[in-house]
Amino acid sequence: MKKIVSMLLLLLSTGCFDIIGSNDVFELNSVNLIITETEASNSQWKVYGTVVNTGDTTILAPWYIEAMFYADSTFSTTFGGDNERMNFPLEPGVTSYWTLDHRSESVIEADYPDFKIKDLRAFIKK
Image 1 (tube, helix red, strand yellow):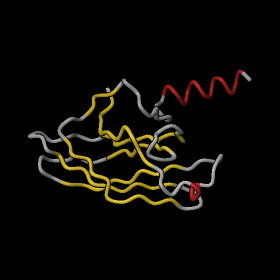
Image 2: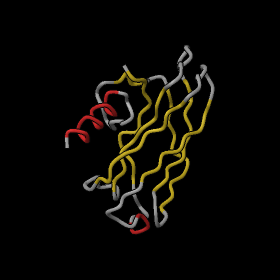
Image 3: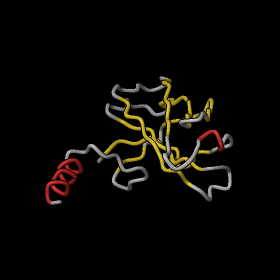
C-alpha cells in the first residue's frame, strides 16, 4: 500500500495528472474559442474547434484548452473533462485548431448524441 501511495504522490508532483477546472492557472482572455463540430461515437465524445489570438502579444508554449463534458444542455449530469496541451506559440491574429475528447467506462457515449461542453477556456499554468 505504501508503494502505491508513494507512486501516486510522485506522479502528482511531476504534473502527470491534469486537473480540469483548476483555479491554479492564468486564463487567457485574449482568445476567441469557437466550437466547429461535435461527435458522439460508441466509445467517445469529440469536440473540434478553432482558437484565435485576439490580443497583441504572442501566447508562449505550453498553453492549454479545456472543457467539461455534460449529457445535454441542462448541464445536470457531467462525465468529466479534457484538456489539450498546445506545444507551440500562438501569435497575434493567428488561428489554430483544437480537439477535445472524453471517454467514460460508465456509459455508452452514443447514448448521449446531444452532449454539450461547458467551461471552455484557454489558459497557461502558474
